[in-house]
Length: 359
Image 1 (cartoon, rainbow, N blue to C red):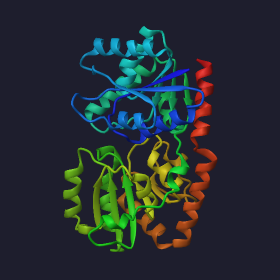
Image 2: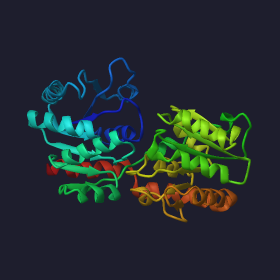
Image 3: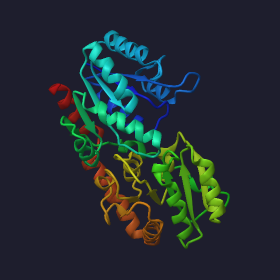
Image 4: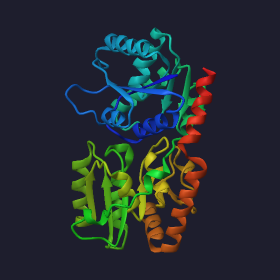
């Protein structure tokens, strides 16, 4: 049975890691092919990574501005590949892929990773996506929190299949994350994600300035439109060498394993992969209680939850976890056990197999 994923991002972020993990878990029973939109001339690390893992992957020639040509192109791929189901990830794949699947006579499932509403343009895209979801044969949400949002806009055929993580990825020796700093800190708080408004990295910097221990460093992994302004804000707050903006890293798994705490300061989330990855690495998580995040952080057990947009609460929670090493170790161990019990790709793949059989 051939499963086709239609994606829009050229990068390997949380949603892309989920697609690749699911494909690996389904490998024995399903052939997986990846299609991706990407601006002409740009690198396509997601497709490159898929090929490295042994999957067929194709860059699409047409993008949203060539609306009809894009639909014809995707429909042509679906026919040639003998696709039995199309999985769409994001507003553009939902909008164009849904119509292409109808043209090819292939069932189509949208995978809803979350809506950010970060800018007016993103809010417009989110609105288009909410309309597109009504035309899908089924909608999979990556958390119960996102499923509630999708049902609230009137979509009926909805199933929550949680994001997952491969715990084996975190068995390798950790990278010395302290080596990223010009002055080695005693403890390191890490954060990862796209440097965009919905991720709340400005709140994290405000919290960092309120953490009283000057030997706590903050490592920010990722890139995005706010990087320059965040670097300026860190300087204004006097954080100096305590904060490192490390950009995108291919070795993020091993870097996460070297953290003392992972911080998530988002205003909105589906179910963040980086939270699952930190738990799999035995790293406690201090996160904002938004979207599906409370499904992956057990407050007081695997980490701590705080309100969004509250740097004081975030700073207090980070200080509390960092100050108590036995508690921090216990939280990390509880997080790994939670991943083994609830967030494996084997369980995710079984849920998808049941869904495919029902279409």
